[in-house]
Image (cartoon, rainbow, N blue to C red):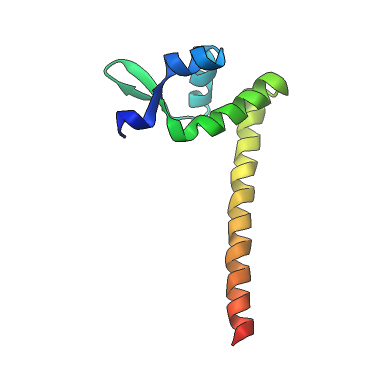
Length: 98
């Protein structure tokens, strides 16, 4: 992964005014991948939207990490099912046109 695609945890936590331990906990639950380069820890920029969502759930809605993990799993499952529905609709439309 290119360093340009990463943001340091120090910079991220300072910007959002959160504790490092929150990101460590997300990593422990498998919700976040933390990359270490030359003893500096980074998160992928593409995961910022997900982290922001986890932060809102945790800090604003007071959902614990177990709950965030369950919600995240359900959201991934829902997205997968929606994609499957789109695929099946496309197949159905092709068969109806024939």
